[in-house]
Length: 145
Image 1 (cartoon, helix red, strand yellow):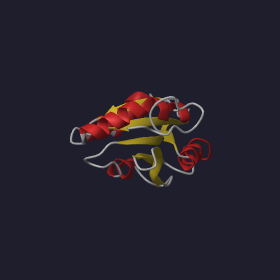
Image 2 (tube, rainbow, N blue to C red):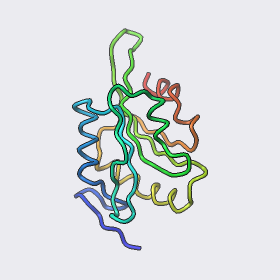
Image 3 (spheres, rainbow, N blue to C red):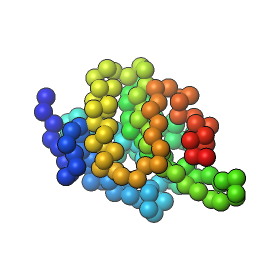
Image 4 (cartoon, helix red, strand yellow):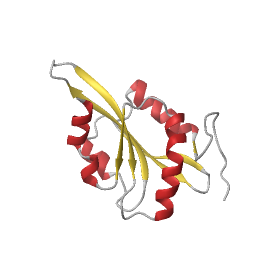
């Protein structure tokens, strides 16, 4: 199977569609989105936006958007207050790969992850999650502080 690579930095794996890059920049710079869920479109041979969450959406809305039996990439903008009472924001990259997903999907997402991360620069932390307990709000809080 051959893959079409998009973008100057994509040396392996799937490239990111332009609207995916734009959605990430809107989250990162303009705070238009709380989160972005990405999926690999095997027909187009690229990573596309599946869903965006508005700034008003909660962490529970985000986790409910992750499919139970399929892999996804996700970016979550986590706002918190430090012990010094400063408002901060950290961007988490989540590689969602549930144990119940197909082996082919796990392999496809695993081999495309580095190219995806190169194209969307600006993550503070990465979480590899295989079940909901690994992408819990407490996990983000522990990582961000």
